Image (cartoon, rainbow, N blue to C red; front, top):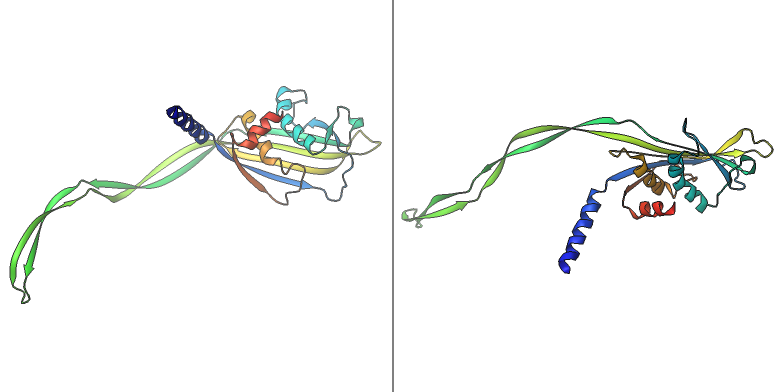
Length: 235
C-alpha cells in the first residue's frame, strides 16, 4: 500500500512541476469623484465583431460575472433597468519570438591517479637519516578550460482582459455617462490558450476588480493554484 502512496505523491509532484507559472499584472482605477449608486448593470462586448451571445464571450465573461455578483452587482438584460454599463474586452496577441543568449563554463575532467611521494627525514643538524616512499591517490578533478555560448528562442503571447464600468444617466439611456472604474488585467507567457489563461486572469484580479490598486499589482500563480481551481467551479 505504501508503494502506491509514494507513486501517487510522485505523480502529483510531477503535475505541479508541469503546471506553468505566470505573472498577472492588474491595474485598476476608480473615479473617486463619481459616487456609486445602485449596482444594477448591463454587460456589453467591447471586442469588435463579438456579441454577448458568442460562446467564447459567455465563457470568458462568466468568471467576472460571478466576481461582480459577489461584490453586490446585479446583472440585468435591459439597459433601461441598469445603472451601470460594463464593457468587457479580452484577447491574446500573436506570438512574439524572444531570443536569449546563455554563457556557460566548459569543464575538463582529469581522471584520478596514484603517485609515489618520497619523504626525506633529517636530524637536528640537517643530515639525512632516512627516506620513505609511499603511494598517494589523487582523485579525479575538473578544470574550467573555456566558455560556451548557447542561443535559445521561444515564443511568448500577451493575453488581456479589460472591464470598464460607465454610469448610465437616469432619463438618458441612449449614451454612457462618465467612467466609474476600469480594471486592466494582462499577462505575458508561453501559453497561447486563452481558455486556459482566462480563469487565471480572473483569479489573480479577484481582490482588485472595480477597486483602486493605486499602481500596478503583480500576482504569480499556477494553473493548478487553489484560487484558479475555485474560480473554475464558480461558473
